[in-house]
Length: 141
Image (cartoon, rainbow, N blue to C red; front, side):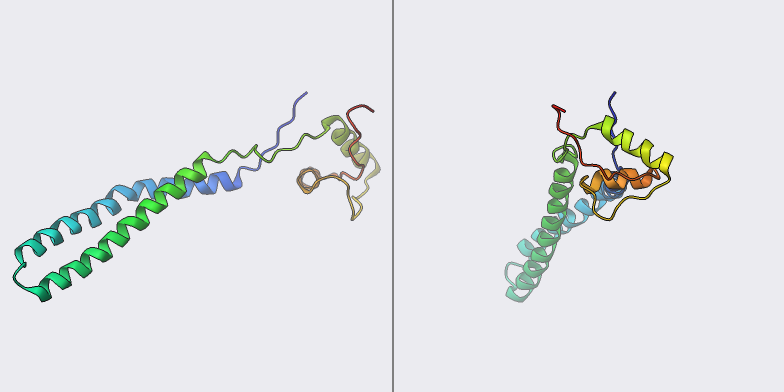
């Protein structure tokens, strides 16, 4: 028997953020790119007016920074999507976990404050209305 428990709260939150981001990204990227295009034309037209060139160049830097930030957000989003939630997974003796949960349900007991189980397993048991207090037995016992 295989039991896989996964908390999808964070994944759902990230998916909602990603959807919102993707919905706005084309507009947000289009704005600074269009501004940079117009500003570069303005710099070319104002080549004989140093003050105008300086003003347009300053505005171009602002738009370039905005574009850089958007690209960084895309890179960050890509990194989050490629994370594997099972990278930090640890094996758990499910038969022992279930036996402990059944024993606790029968006894109506509560978990001691110090449990040898990892926090993730304690959270699962707490959510199930049971408690894990016995340490996992080795695979050879």
